Length: 162
Image (cartoon, rainbow, N blue to C red; front, top):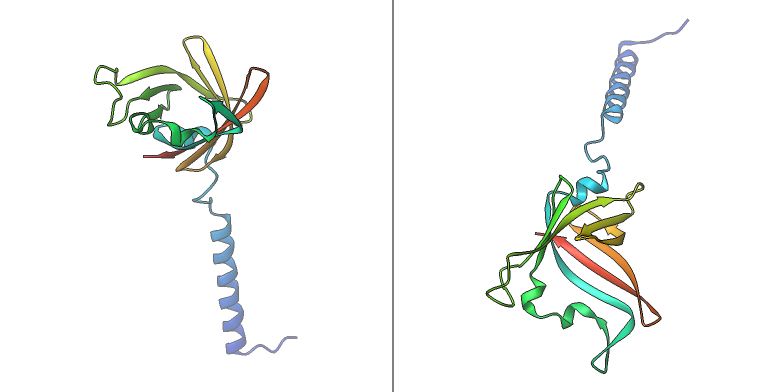
């Protein structure tokens, strides 16, 4: 038979308690469980922080890759609101290009494709598909492809929440 003294029994008991605690903690639902992409997008206000195009596009005789730097400040502060009910608005920011511009200049619906890799925006019969390259709780990077004059362009837009 085993010859266990009090100290040995106490060590075994402590190890069992530690093991049980570890098992309970590991089995507990992860507080930081992955959030769905829909939840990461909806109910937030997004503002563009960067926009690039590849290959470079000829704009008035100059090849441009950084579209964002070409935008006037009155459009750089415009915002997009993706509502949890599947609607969206594009709105003027604090600075309007013209005082007569409406505050909300586009409305529509938004959804994600079945594997949540494409953001689909629909407004006035126009559908825009934007591939989600990166999405966190505070950052969104989307990619759109467009062919103009036989040239396939890739537009990459980066947004942050405000």
